[in-house]
Image 1 (cartoon, rainbow over the protein chains, first blue to last red):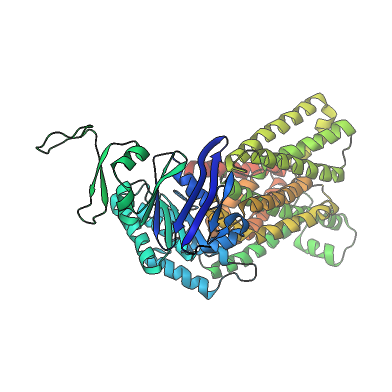
Image 2 (image 1 turned 60 degrees about the vertical axis):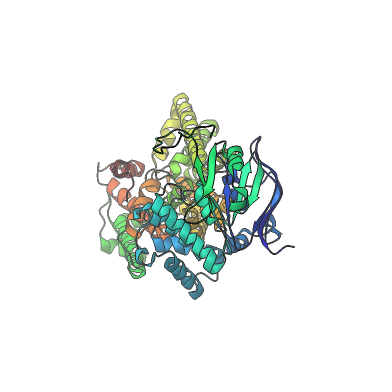
Length: 276
Length: 333
């Protein structure tokens, strides 16, 4: 069994009722890297992530975590290896940041062992890493969008798993907070070699932060690999159905996608057009 | 949140227990028949067979115990339902439990001409359980399993169906109407201690199980996906919760008939006092629920003396303004 794969799927088919979303997908997600699923709205990237996180039962096929079929592991065992932050989670009113983060230790609690010094330590580390120590007694619903998302990430950190899945962690955040969240995840990956798998809408941010992108189209993987290798005009055209120019980010050197279309063009050169 | 530290909460719990016991004493001492605190004590220490002593022992004591137990059970059932359905207005009565129990009792009276309270107990327990199970099953049909929305809709539909069928039967059969009307309004009076004792084991099991799952309810309240991600078996928890709700609200309706509002109001009051941690909310709700029903029942004896207002009416009178208040405030605590 290949230990370089944190997660893999075997002939995974997902469907809602009679509609097939993902068809016989074989996917390998490398350990210790940041993998980002990209694709158009409704292409099934969130569905795939949810299924990997066992929130959705596959119609057929299997998800393997460290080589073991996830359906055969106890759900608490899985929760000690893999954390999931769903899209736009909502905390009950009045729940404090500390109470939220403490819930991340649920997979380690049993009837006999309710709360240990290790739990305490992991919770403190998670608050430290997300810079929320000072806000720990504030109610989650009183925080700003960025702080709130950091609190949820802190909960998944307290879960102390090698792998963290995040479904659109930057949705509804302004640009400053999008970068703040992605920087935080990037650091976690750099410092602690955690495997991070997420769905992102912003292709340029995906190129900047991901070691590995998975482009999904028509129930299948359209392409997978390093952004600088796989992201080009024809991929964007086929996956997102959008004409664009792919250039190089002047700061990071990663691919930068600039869509064609309408808008004010103040360059002296000929107006950009659909035909280039 | 009124009580913040754990010390405050433990002290609060102790205080609430004392207050509940005190209210039970008040309920035993004050009523239509003039009795004093000394008489009440004598009735248990040196019983002399007098009318007052008899009333205290056989009428007032069971009544106080029933009010406390029923109030506590309805409040806990309300907490569980509100958490599972994520619906702040959830309570046993909107999930068909009271309507199912009422229907079962009315059927028994009209078809079998049975009108003994002891039989009502088991019939209504059965009716409550069957009705709630139907709601749970209907709410679980479909691909995504038990969802708050489907459960609430199923509850509303079943309540409406059972309530209208009950009314239909009562319109046809006027004798039955007379026999069950007082039961249908909900009351803790005129019940023997045996009635309580026969359902008490179910209530105690329900209280204990509710405390045992309180931490899991905290996890579930973070949302279905988050809870599953944390390794909680949400489907299993909902089945257990359903069982506890049947035991508690079924047992309560069996003893006291349908009593509304405690299940809705008490969880909100409790959360305002102790916050949202179910490990505290459940025991405090139980105590507050017992208190509210004791207060409502004691007050019901004095409003139109010498007659009594059915306690179900009293809780509604106390509960409705509060209901409007929380609805208007948008549940911001």
